[in-house]
Image (cartoon, rainbow, N blue to C red; front, side, top):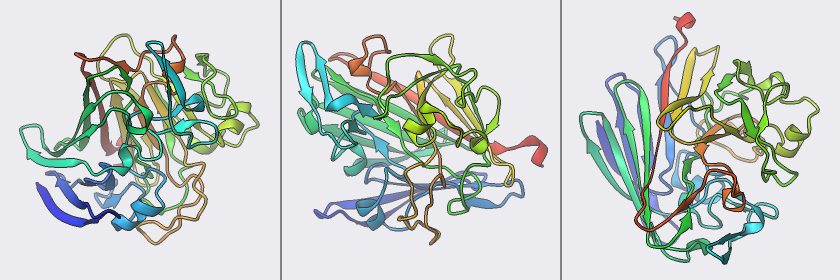
Length: 355
């Protein structure tokens, strides 16, 4: 089922619509046309009780004023580009510097801050919303008119499928992702340090002090970033380690183990108290694991609770940060006549031993 309603207006008077998707299991996803933002995601716990497992706000106003990308579509380029510069086909492009010395998440007005055209649908796979937006040539400094389509589909198997598609009339970097903050115990329920995480990644891209990749693909083995075996987020997060110091905790891109193209399991997260499990499958080469290190208690969320440090985590499927400046990384350059197509699935379930 898809329910559609008005959800307020932006500062410049653009109408924002809210879409509520629900499946046969009672799982519910609420997403709006502003930023393609996922406002809430209600899934059952081991007792069958539905709970909202994503951070955010009750009203549009919070997203307009204080949101650290809660639930949003990120583009044109998710993550960081060093010094806000890259050279493409011999031309240097300059972007906004909005994160220390670097460019972050598409700039001052990235895809998280635009009103998308939205069309609800129902088909044999499930129910959903198609979000479309055209980013004009020169938008935030990027070249080319970029036509973007992102589809959210909720299935009866408790999957939220994200399909990303883009075309351009001029070569441009593209790295689209989704920035939902999860807390599987329920948003506002405290920190996520007890969540058990497995990342299907033997390597990661180490960062410098400004959180830009050094260019190395480093083995996780023997480091606090080794989640190849399921480990609590809080088990090693406060260890004395240069990478943890640079990120303020986990804020790193992990290189997903894969033998070829197609969907692979990138991550599995279990919350022992609720019994909820989140599995992330993707066609992307990387996943940014971020542990809400910059949340500081200044934001009051949906539950009326303040969001303290590490009260949510993100699993942003993506290409590697700063790829336009690293020729050895998988390319993020989209050219005319090509199609950008990626898929990510967030699949929810219950820990088998928790029944």
